[in-house]
Image (cartoon, rainbow, N blue to C red; front, side, top):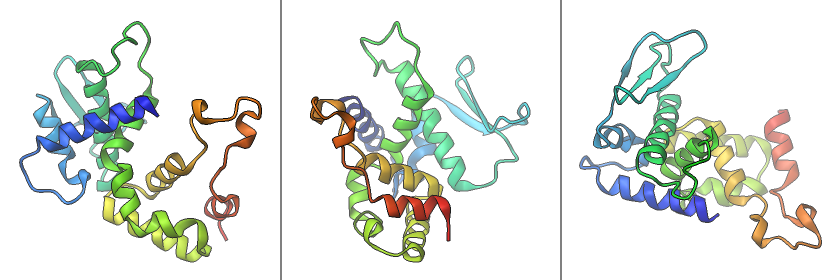
Length: 193
């Protein structure tokens, strides 16, 4: 989790520089991008592209067909992650290795859904113990509150409650000893009624 902790620390730093009031980080993602010296706007993109990060022009291009604000927030946060990871040297020591999209996604998770805020939401405490209908209601409420897609709420829950990182596992037992979230909960979410 050390690398992820560094991402959360950087996300807190970026959010601390935002001048407009915000109640959830999604409300600050646009200003955060502008504070990096970048811009963003809608522009027709090649087929199957929702957004492109144009480093030469320091511009994030969003497809005008992308109208869902929650998805826009998530995509802008991943691009903010790309900007921060590549231009601010967060990956010192890894400069000879390619930066994978997963790190951009992890940055978006750290920025939009930090553990401290997720813990404060009723979804985190109730999700593994309630019925399927209530769980879906809680997911939808968390999605609306954090202004991100529901699947991102589920991914954050999985990330924060999933198996321990390798240094914490028992080397003799391997990953089999890791405690996963309630399997019935995940089966109900993915398989539906």
